[in-house]
Image 1 (tube, rainbow, N blue to C red):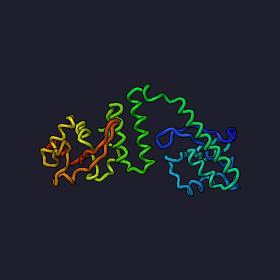
Image 2 (image 1 turned 180 degrees about the vertical axis):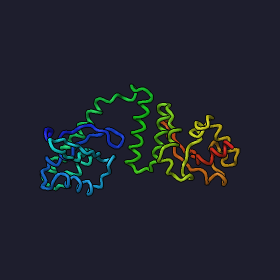
Image 3 (image 1 turned 90 degrees about the vertical axis):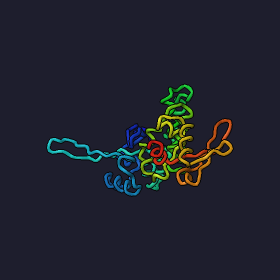
Image 4 (image 1 turned 120 degrees about the vertical axis):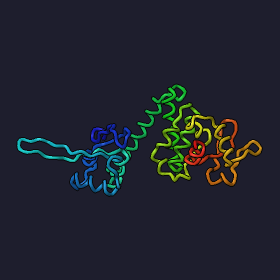
Length: 254
């Protein structure tokens, strides 16, 4: 089957993915519908998005007299599996299982060749942690803006690489209502180039929080601008406050 369906790496959706030519898949599955109509119907049924699930370009073939045009669809392996599954035939099932096995082998190869985190340079290590944290958040159904915030925090803790300034420019953060955009004092301090301790002191001076038995607690005035946030290290865990970034930064820079 590998001779029938050529799997290649292509850039789709801003990342390199395993892909196949939709016409090659059509030939392997052997449906009676003409290729162009079959592909168009499958795209419609799966609600595939151009630029995310597939790419399209028109190939022009010159002839002695005139020329012919052909729509060339490159589809991701995930979309190819859906196409095969929709055929509801033994051949469709066989090809879908083949694609699944290809993915398994690719993951195994990556695991064998990927260097341990301890051997990576800080920037590369930080990106691997960032991707893993965001992927985990997506699997768990965590809102994107919160998943990004927690990922950036983990990266800084593990590598010292600070993505906080980029975090505030992320589209997912822009879509968050102002009252929901929260960061810890340490993270706000990095934006203002001051320590997290200083941020806490300034927040307290504004009457938004107070220190009780070594723990910062919000005042009635401050409750609307913060949320309680769980934290954990290898040795202990607890709770601290995350503050509305827009309000606190404006308050502290007036």
